[in-house]
Image (cartoon, rainbow, N blue to C red; front, side, top):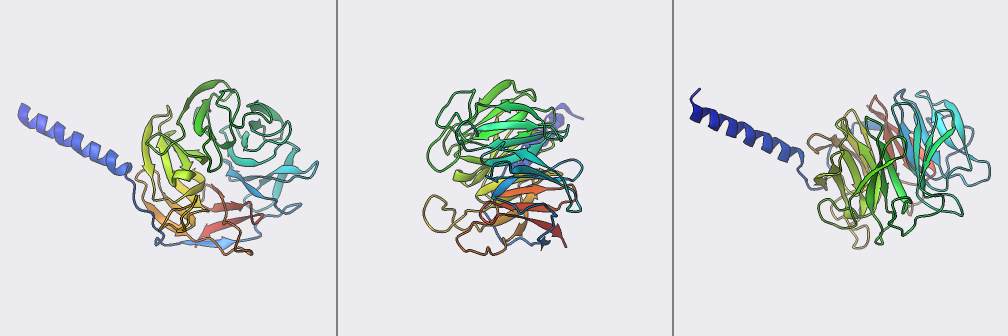
Length: 336
């Protein structure tokens, strides 16, 4: 090939590649007119007691569901492992948590729980539990950290996600008022690596992250709830994109590089939760291009003052679990 033609060809390839990256990072208007190919399943779990307020849910590599609720009675066991058939396999974790906010399972089967609220000398920590319930590690200081920017405490840890190499990402900062919103990164053994993100509305900034998840490339997807968007970072904390099309995210899950985002707050009424033109519910799309493929409207709650579900988890078959703190339940969505 003529050298000049080679230069043109390489330039075209580079332009095409950049266009592909730009497309993958595009933000679209929020939409609620996508199809809903799912049907609702209630009372799917066989448990020794009913759910208490809950949003910390996840699914492990065996397709077992894990839920950690906010049972407050002394001796109440907050952690449930439930098989795909709905049978309870394990129930443990008495008196460990105050407000378990998000949970994740690592490749070794350990359960990580972010506890967002203090009460006495409890809470404001991220706890690593063995599958049998043994406490293996605690990050942060119990009951300490609200309003603090120190790196050895958490200002309301709301989310936890585990990278393929075991690195741990923790989101902190809860509520509408200004706080120390940021992401902290640790090794699987709890050694601090770095922090990124600050309070704000600009690219790379965050306002009250409410949940986080990682994809197959270890990119981090942050539910930037007060900014009504998903923020995407690489594993080193470099900003990639901000997506508005998934609504005002309360919960995030990723399975098979499909992104599941649950919106429990969007409102057309001016105020803290103002996100006009966006309906509450679950949106499903690809992490590769950010396009929303499906929209699942929430079932009507028994009390109209109750929010829809705020926690979301997905199994390897694409079944969706949605957890509600107001409604004290976890429902299951399966494809038709």
